[in-house]
Image (cartoon, rainbow, N blue to C red; front, top):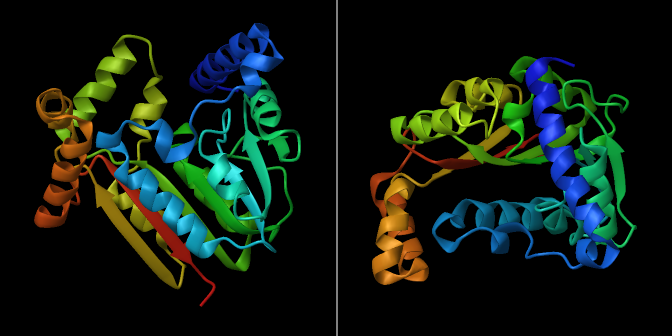
Length: 254
């Protein structure tokens, strides 16, 4: 395990251990999940991600979630009735997830660069904000390997072109809140193109051209109105390179 990967593993493991140390009742008293856990001004991409899950994930399917953590976005997958395996490099994070899910969810300690499942094991691979936690070529190859021939890849993640967002991420790196490798590996348009190659159908939507201004506006008119303004701007300018987030649905089930 390299230095950055170990640092990220320790970061999330320690957070999860602190939750587990509080006691079972506190762990099971889960906060809001998925898009509801995200401030309204940043919620649109997660709402769309969940809509895609409801549209393309079905009860009889096998689903692998990469980088599940404590399960913030796992709930949307389990609600489909599919057979979901939640994977993460942090075993303690998965313990928290298991307690919050009531123990009925399968979990697997896994490095997304070397997924411990056979070829063609899953109908769907899903990822919410985890693509920068592995070497892109290795992660993409593993996603392709474990997907069945008619499989689907669904993800929501950050984009790394907007200079304001890039500056903010480097500040987080300099203050020890994230590692350098996660900055360097943050998805770009080229990464989206690379991971999409070979799929029969690819749909990408971009969100948050001016998300960096939204906290200021929210103080004036409130988060709900500000979220509407942000969404309207995205539609108006057809945001792409300047986006904060993107949602990708790549399909072979046509």
